[in-house]
Length: 334
Image (tube, rainbow, N blue to C red; front, side, top):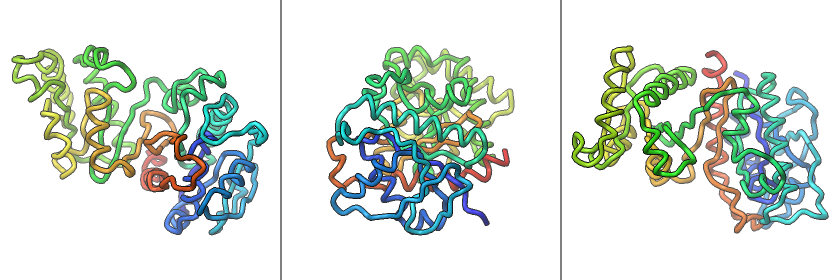
């Protein structure tokens, strides 16, 4: 069976992206399960190989993924050569690096849109560097949404047997509560179910987490469940969807981890983030669903404080590639 072809944009050159990419591609398991093509800068990668304890790999520069040889010990690289090494500083916010990171992502999305790769596994970028570089996107999801012409893509976290969708992402807690509406919940459950099916997950029930403690105890402290969640679940069941809720957030993630539910719809950002990252911070992987292409990602930042020291863990990057390999066949069939 042909190994899936995964595009890896290098991320912010000043962060730990180059380091974790090199370590991931030096990993034997990754080599045996995926064909990875890096979109980045040769000079940045060569510089990162000089960090303490870093593996040294051969760099094979190519123009298209189909030119790659994908041999052990080799990085297949589409070199955009967009970093001036005389101005380059590791661990610092930089408009130049923000623009470079955006260019790597844009090229990777182009490859996926053209079906030249099976999935994209992204490395961390820095919001300040993007802003300083004049890139008018707050993060990866917004970039992917724009460049794939996808409206409101879904964020799905997976760690071990736990899958968590998010009803809202980067908004205030006050606004997140206001976004818990019957209509929005119905829309998200429908689209989340479609996203799961596209990943090959067709069995099981989705759970909706409660917003208030003990799901509000029927309106005793908070009425969002009474006004929005219960009516949404009732309507969704009439529509034929397998869904339950609201279920107290202090137990629903544990239940899903142990197989009672195939996924959980978290009603705000930190609710699901805390549950997944406490379970296993390094192996919590983000999947952007609801797009015509498959994107998996590390769920950590650029870590400027340790960049250049050779100590960044590649585990999350390896897991992101692994999930790209896991879901690409079903996604592409769907």
